[in-house]
Length: 59
Image 1 (tube, helix red, strand yellow):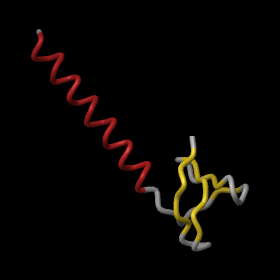
Image 2 (tube, helix red, strand yellow; image 1 turned 120 degrees about the vertical axis):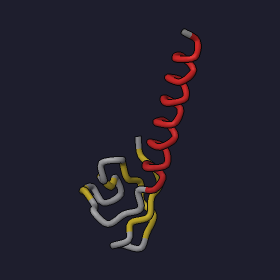
Image 3 (tube, helix red, strand yellow; image 1 turned 135 degrees about the vertical axis):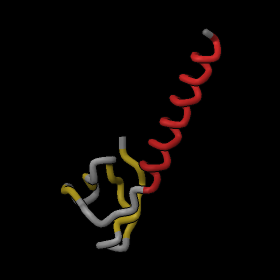
């Protein structure tokens, strides 16, 4: 899955996967804004923690 992320080296938005592969350039990029991926990971982690707490309370 890719996201439309800002590449600081080119100054352009590009489709980049979470590993840093730019589908627009056809190569890995290293200086790009991965905040959308980080935000998504944090949200998934928070939901997993809430689910675990809920399971613990139900016991």
